[in-house]
Length: 465
Image (tube, rainbow, N blue to C red):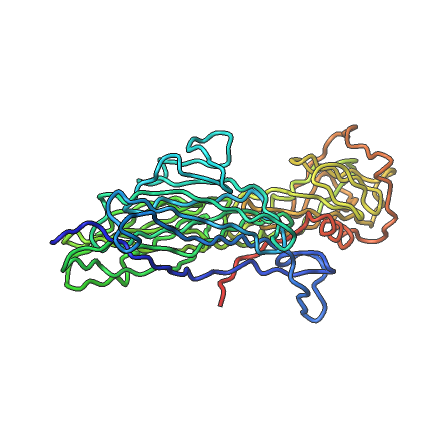
């Protein structure tokens, strides 16, 4: 095989975009998916609810004296990433991740944010270079909360530099793409977006044509029984002459772990708290040593929890502890938590509320208790409150609890209830006076959850057309 000094020509490649969460609005309040509250009339989904949409434009440049069509080993490529929230809700906790492209080496101390240098160490500033990510390392930049550009939100610029190294084979593509992870400020739903892909082609000698690879687009809806996805990256690969292809490496994904699978495949396992788009690149060689790199775009799908109605019988007890999660399930096998509780016309993430009948609902972030109204709950009457159940990826749903007086001791259908001693700290203050709402509190409580931005309901992500 003939070999010449690497020459890189620049091309830009688009990544197929995947879905955004489907959003609805009920009564002008943002919700995602379905809940135990009235649906919009006549199937009208209403206006779209606010959600963030962080987009990053990726490009690169070189100061090589040979120009951008004749780069050689030791020449530098500087990547520029322009970050902007093009949605209509704030993106919280945004983190930019960019793995160093195969065939290059990170230039220490080159990372910047908005023109200011960042250290490579994992210290107090916003950026770091992590050499432990894959074989070549990756840059991480904490962008914090990003308000929508339409509301005056910032446009960030991240840059870093790599050096073309001797591992770049003739005609090998130097492929780069970045990923940004964040959550919606209103919904708390996890999301991730991927940049466009940029690449250079390392020029080789005559007969050095590398394999032709496929840019794969795949999706996974993780479950307890199937938490990972096996990607046949060699599927669809072609060569100019018959030869055996080998997977020789990959760059790390931002929000998942990677492992070698059977038959030259890659196994992707998403993080338990992530849903959205993720990216990795993989490199394949032929028998002659020719190498090329392509991408795998992964869409991690998430389903909302499935709360079951809880029926609790007091049976003479003044107060019970209600395990509302005991009969709730999650299609993805995620561990569920109670995010908020609603009673009467109020909702809290921690605190005490009065139901419309004067019952006390107390939630301390872990334990949920119900105390009967003064004088007890009358025979034949029921009291009601609601709660929001959430999974680690931010998807939520609303469940309801119906409390009856009962006649026999300590029974519960649905959620588990156990008698509890009175909690003096749970006594309502003057600000928690009865709101006067009559009848069942379910609809009013659900509305309160929504009005406070605490009761948003997540749904599975759907692939764009």
